[in-house]
Length: 110
Image (cartoon, rainbow, N blue to C red; front, side, top):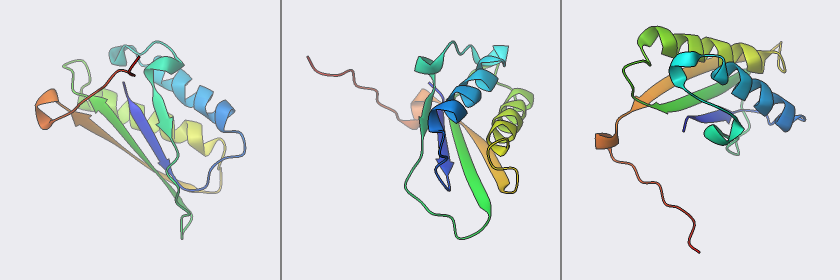
């Protein structure tokens, strides 16, 4: 599941922007993402002291997720966010993780 962290001002229309971000991610076939349930978007509490919104995208490493695909992902997500903040600088980075870097996913307890 890709995680998109958006550091900066929270938008007034979070759901609309979230939907736009998921759409641009879904439109990249190499990512194999199908729907909002496959993407986690979070807005850490942070107020930027400059005019920059920082976006960090974390995805699992996959042979189809080449540098070209990761650059396209960064560009498409940044452009989607800039539609809501046309006068702000958007800085977007994509990080690939492998399972051997350590990770854990727990299902809810019943």
